[in-house]
Length: 267
Image (cartoon, rainbow, N blue to C red; front, side, top):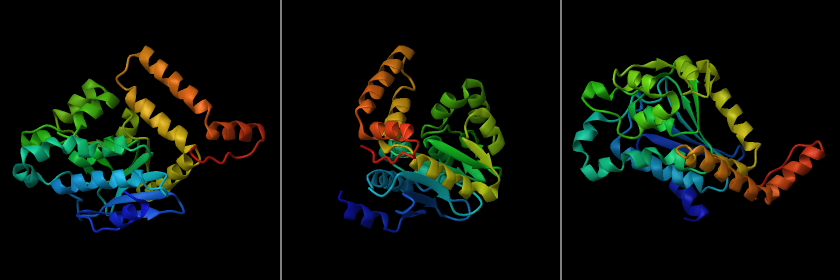
C-alpha cells in the first residue's frame, strides 16, 4: 500500500475507534471511543489489526499509542458477538489481538478504569503499559463459563508466573494499576490526570533512540522469549554485529565522543 493509500485508509471512519496521526510528534493514536465502556465488537478486532499494520508502514510514525476516550479503557468484548461469530472468525481472534506485538515500532497503551477481557489482552500485547491509579485489570471470562481466548492467560503467565495468573484467571480477580506495577504488568502507574503527560513523555523518550536499534531490540526480545539462554545469547550477538555496521551506530559513537545529542535516521 502506498503512503497516500495508507493516509486515506487511516482517515476512514472505524466502528468503535478512531485514528489520529501527529506527524510533527511522530506519534499515532488509536483511540477506543464506544462510550461509556468502549466495548470491542468482533469486527472491530480485525479493523484494529489492519490499522496497526497500516501505522507500522506509515513513514511519519515512530511510536504508536493505544488509548481510550472516557473513564474506562475497555470493559471487554461484545458478549453476544461470541455466540454469533463463526468458528473461522473466532479462530482469528488471537492473531488480531497480537497485532501490537507484531508491529516493528514501539507500541504504548494508556490504561484507565476498566481494562477487562480483550481490553486487557490488547494491552498485554503492547510493549509498554502505562496505568492510571484508576485502572482495574481483569480477565473475567470464568464468569461466563469461558477462558481468555486471545492470548490473555498465556501472555500474563509469561509476565507474572503461574500462581498469580491462576489467581486472576481461575478466580476472575481484578487488580489495581498499583498492583499491576508491583507485579511487573505495568511499566508505570500514575495519577489519572497525569496519564497523557506520562504517555507523551515516553513517546518523546523512545523517539530519541535509533529507529533501527528499537526495531531490532523489540524483535530480538520477542523472538527470544521462549529460546534457551544459549540461543538467546547467540541471537543477541548476531543482532549486535549487524547494528555495528549501521549509520545510526556510527552517529551514536560520534555524538558520544563529540559530547552532542545523536540524530538518528533509522539506517
